[in-house]
Length: 327
Ligand code: UT7
Image 1: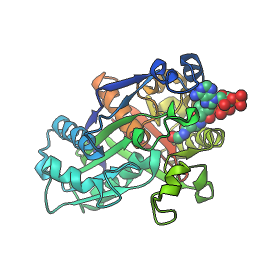
Image 2: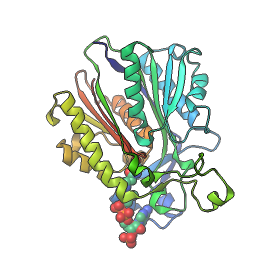
Image 3: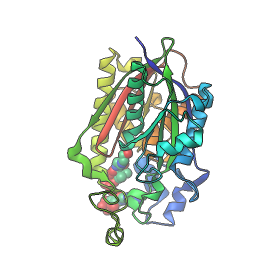
């Protein structure tokens, strides 16, 4: 059976760091509150002259280099993002040009918020298994700093900017993606969203005055769904492969809040020592969080051949996803 595998990982992180102390000068918050409620200590903010496609191309280039693949041979680029360069065309097309990827290949974006990267991996896996594309670059990129209300302490302390990428190819050995599982619940679409800027509520001076072009979130509701659904998705992924929690070497889950990860850890019965975490240094980078964590883990030499990696993410939609890979 043909499988896909992650042949290389990469990330791109803006140089500018905003600490909790910086934020406490902007809104009524404190380092103690943010660390206790979220585990976040700092986040990166993209400089105004750069856009999502710049970060995505940098991460993509790094993933291609680590895979030993020339970007000109990449025949499909999938970008998961809710903060693309512009409403259309797809940010992936700008990435294709910046990378010098195969001009006759395809490039498209997908919108699944924080689950966008794992949705992209699932689609890439299907493309590779059917033989439709051979070298697929999957990128999760967000410039959330551009859609955050920096006067709203309930949201502005949570998010950050970053990009992470994987270059996926067909596997020629035992390593590879074992399964992916995608879920959504549109009944919860309005507990985490950006209401204005599309056909439903176009961007108008009134909408801007009402701040409806910024992220709106019912934090407590999202929190409950995140713990419940990421844990349920993780269990489905393990069951689908006949695996138990003990078989899992590392969990690479969406880095939204350390308490959410602790809740998932408890529910799936996998200790926190086996969760890779970097939320303290990045905050919630939505679709970039899983590939950024994956790339850091690779760079730190955390994985050895045969390790079982469990993935899980949830975000606006609500959309969530899980998956298992053998490294
Ligand atoms: O990728 C998915 C995207 N979203 C998420 O993952 C977010 C999920 N939700 C969460 O992570 C948490 O719900 C939050 C971190 C957003 C909030 O934590 P919480 O423990 O649920 O706090 P809360 O909303 O219940 O607020 C507790 C108190 C409130 O004050 P009162 O009403 O008790 O007086 C808030 O007004 O904390 C206050 N508060 C703050 N205080 C200082 C809210 N934000 C802040 C803040 N600094 N930044």
